[in-house]
Length: 223
Image 1 (cartoon, rainbow, N blue to C red):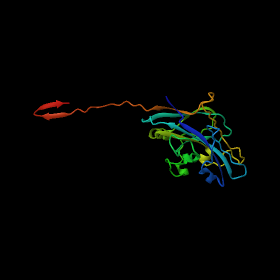
Image 2: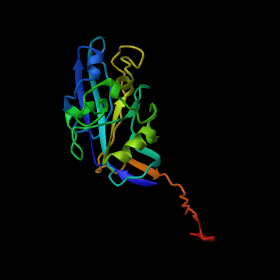
Image 3: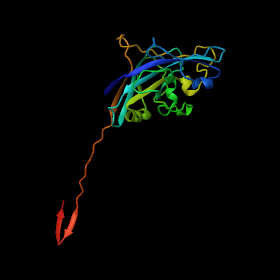
């Protein structure tokens, strides 16, 4: 298995109100400079106010030019505080090979770089993730296709509540419906930052040279 380390990553916070539907498509409001990676969903109990965090991760993948047979995201999930969980989603950030900005909160709602924000653009790269600890997450065919076609493969880690449109994933409006991921920087060797592993598809190629039969003056020539 070949390995790819993170190129750029960062957590973005979003404070939003008015309605659940408008919150889902709202831009980020601040970068979490003290938190390398976190995913978080909270609805303030009894109010139409949300305080959410997502994480954006980019990998430099211009060297991948052949179809893949498998693709995994390895990430440490420090704690799960509810069963709400999260997904790995497709992402198109404002810029490739650059630092995260607040607008990148909506990167998972775009079908191309600089594209319109729309819920119909959501593409999940993983199954629903609800388990803590060091995880090896199998990414699907959508991810394996996109990584070949993009020089900078970008993913978004977003809560189940926002991706699937579930306003109260814990079953009640109690303000406690959140899920946390924590990834440290390289200064803390105890916890590994996210990375990818992959394998390319291999197939035997059979080359057949055709045989030509030429009839001329009763002579047979085979080449």
